[in-house]
Length: 153
Ligand SMILES: Nc1nc2c([nH]c(=O)n2[C@H]2C[C@H](O)[C@@H](COP(=O)(O)OP(=O)(O)OP(=O)(O)O)O2)c(=O)[nH]1
Image 1 (cartoon, protein in one colour):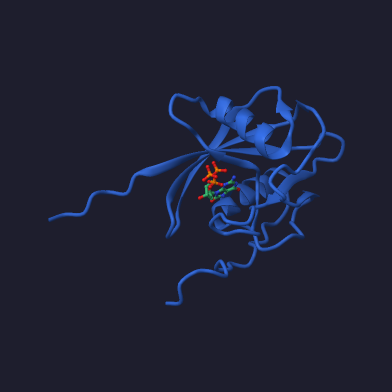
Image 2 (cartoon, rainbow, N blue to C red):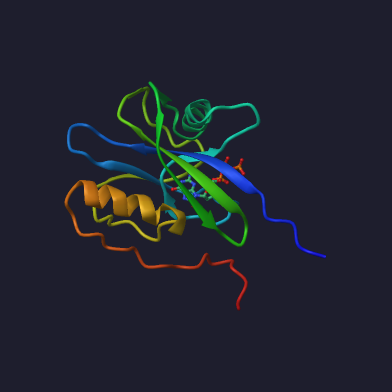
């Protein structure tokens, strides 16, 4: 019998760009999630019936306490993790309201490229490459690190 193809988990991700200096917002994944402690762009899973923009607005309110003005999909990428096959809908966001408040105990950092935080979720590497290209910077791939709880192989 042939195996069922894995179903994609749809994810909305925000590339928040601070207009004064072009810095990018990265945050850490909370404890209890796959890849806990890894740096990522904020976002989360799209729920049934939501658009990417609605999901991103909800996730950033829940996680960061801010309300984005709007979001349009910029890139779509996929990444196959042991825990999930994800389809990432990336939106650049330059306008929001509210004060940043890490509601899930995460850390946040405004970063220039190349990033100086690590480790970074591998699903974010393609977007870091595009952002580097846009800025005329060489792409420095972050080291690939397995999560601490990954089964030994
Ligand atoms: N937010 C975010 N997720 C990413 C990035 N890169 C990447 O591969 N992913 C993957 C990791 C996860 O498998 C998935 C996001 O799911 P999640 O578990 O964080 O979403 P969520 O906050 O809705 O979580 P949950 O508590 O509802 O389970 O997307 C990234 O830069 N940002």
